[in-house]
Image 1 (cartoon, rainbow, N blue to C red):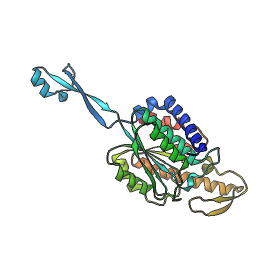
Image 2: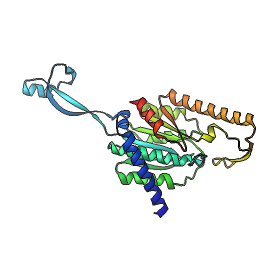
Image 3: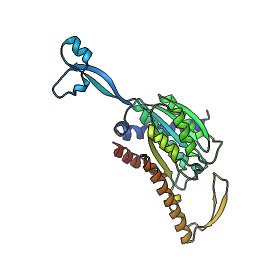
Image 4: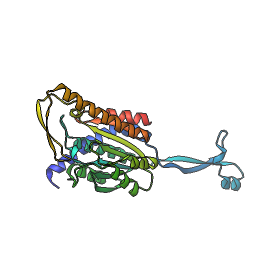
Length: 289
């Protein structure tokens, strides 16, 4: 592996480990539940115990009432569904959206393995680019980080619907899904696929945003390039009405996305390039807890 790539992987690992250990150990554990309750042991019946938990076989054998004790079955499977379409190559404040996605995904992955959970990843554009089955361990997480920072997608457009359908098909057992995307220029009607995925799995949406998208800056006549369609367009950003229209359209887009996610019970947080993403993530985890 190229020395520069090794350094980038190591740099993200150090940052993600630190954020995970400092911020998410308690919040992550309480915000995401296990698969259910697993049998632990039996003990003698005590006043106030639920009679539905009486173990009648042991009770009959010992001629004294005993109850079953259950513990939360903690182990989770966490899947990262990461948008690697062309719009990720955008950023006006120190990093691209794809860089932000890599840091967030790595932090979540280290939080998961610290809680003994398995982690997998699906990279998608307008097609399924790569599927990494869930596993445990540092070596596996480093592979995920390496893929995030080096992968070159074949597609440039976005198809969230196809990605969610693929996820629902390959993940038969309930798991926690983090969907990382800017939700821009989606070519699909993804609501049916979202409904299906959120009906079976615990889905959390992390929307990646750049401040330049929310507030178009006054930079005069600017040539804009769309990395998904390869189209270019000249825009006079010195005109106030032009900036207002652009900002209004983006705000309407965000509102539509939020309403769609909330309709199907999906928690959502907006994370901005060049800004600390710990605060919004902790707020999301606190709401879930």
